[in-house]
Image 1 (cartoon, rainbow, N blue to C red):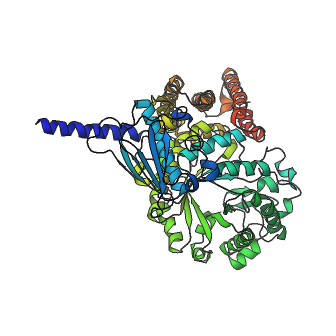
Image 2 (tube, one colour):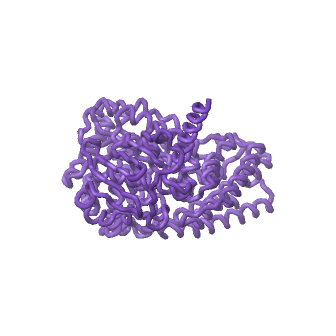
Length: 637
């Protein structure tokens, strides 16, 4: 009986260590083993330079000359002393390039990578184990075998609607993504690169300059991240075509009826020779600033195609054929720079018979942002055609103010599961900024983190404690309270029981204020009971967040961002309650005092939005974003 009790105690101890350690490892590795009988620590005394949380970027203080000379030339099979411990590093090419094994034994640490990249990922994991050691007072003996499910694991940040981050903000984002083993970053660009001959387009946008791209590219490379150029080249060209000197390139210079209603000047016309000539010029200036071998030419949502200047050609050849022909012309230009063309796959999916015609050296990006997007049906279409492709879910934070976490998490998991099953080359988590980019960076953290984890290993990361990881990995809060509150705030929209497409009800309450809350197709789902419960829930979670012991370097900014986002969501709820008291559901039916109160509340929020924007982002774009809030304010009169 005593032997059985001891065995149970040992097993319980192993499980406790494994469970505690799992909260520090992100992404969770494929295989983690605690040696049998291990209950406490190794006999190593490991002294880290500084604190674990301040360890180098990327671990350069640990490995002298790592950045300058690389692992193979200086550290291959060479023990590196850390205090009284020995760290042995080697490269074994029988492992896959990004794979590694890490063993923390009784007297030493053994790290083997399939390449220099694999060693780097092993060091990142070692750093996280070091954080565990700092918090628990000992280093656990552990054995880890790990490699990614997706070769390319990326994040795309929208810097065109309307938020262009400062360089400091971009560096901080790269630091976080690198620590989660992300290896691709894209900055979605429409008009926010400072093209020399096109100042009219970007002059108010605080664009990325060639020099800034070069510096960021080098910073990404040091963190084993590939900075992939991204320039939309067909649809989403309104920021260009609204200007008189580019208007002649538009498919619809004047409004025309599309599947999205009346539109104009959003798509280049493929029958205008100047459309291709413009892209030739832009590519020639943009691409030399990047070292990546990839280039995302966009080409999504070309909803005006076939409605205007190309109508006759589309009727003759078919809209899909006209689309594909222009995309292939763009690809020829990309080929001149020895780059691999990436393109959004939504339009070609409407013409699946053309997918087999796509050159096999292109990469399709299959995007879909709802929880039930049919990745299971669309992935095989590219797999069967032998075309490399990515799955591209999203953070679901745009058009939401405080997030749509339940949808985001399901969407990310759906993409990862089906992408892995059907052989996707990559996983690209997209973070868009539609309608003014009102959501702050802090609101996006849970979905960015979960997407990074899934893209590394689906099976071992599906059930991770996202809230706990947000607390530890991002906010430096060992209590877990801040992460829990942030995740819960992203689910507050569910309390309203008023679903909306590609958005949440808080956003729609503001954008649709001119509509009646009692007859509008989405707003009419709102009632007093649910709204009051939602207000109480948001206030409760915000209080918990504000009281949490957050110790990250930007803690003050994070608190202000989350407080502002909650205040804007609460304002939407206050607006709903007010309109529910009227007989017709219109804002105009409110009494003057209530109108004035709501107007004053929103004015204060607009001012605060402008202040907080400047903490992480450039001035350009702020006016456009604030004007979208001011447009709501006009409906309060």
